[in-house]
Image (cartoon, rainbow, N blue to C red; front, side, top):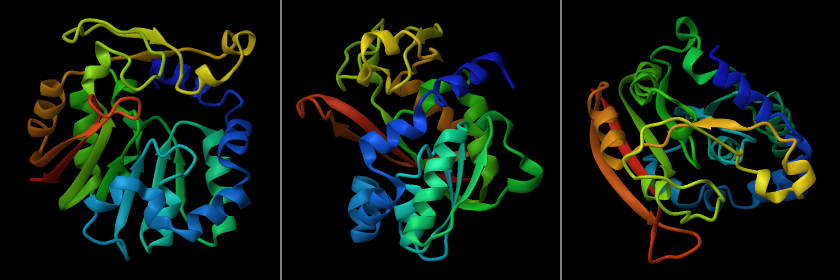
Length: 251
């Protein structure tokens, strides 16, 4: 496991379970919301699935199960891959409270056990700021392709690359040249919700942000046919792009 992934693991295990309880409710409380309207909990991502019942989904960096559990409630078989034991604890407890089963593999995404998982999934799905945690986007996309069954689909939703030059999502991340390729140190996603004293204690992450063309080309060059690329408004200002979703099929 590379040094930077160990750093990310430390960041995502700092007070993480308690953070989810404070912000999303106890597992029992969160499960109640998920059960009331799982489609609503999936937000715009629900529109990218052709069906839910019986499909095998790899939820990449699935965090606390916020999308995995609604998918399971809709009938999908979901395996979460994530680096944080604390995320797993919250997700499994929430799934149990919701009356569904999810699989959860705590691992470095770049070291997923392909003897076990190669060509196992109909869909690989990720959302909410994933790509910048990985320093080699081509290697990452190869792994996504290997996880899929023949003609399987990738749903890759992420922060819009314009966030490199402007804090358009209010994440308090440093900005840089749009074409910058360097790796930089930054706070993990939740750090901004803590007071300054605790914020200084949270381990940093090592990020690499990509341009639109780098993302699209990495999809095309690593075994996918790109079928759709949508841009979504920022949560902070609907006049600006905040997120994108790429839909691609395994060739």
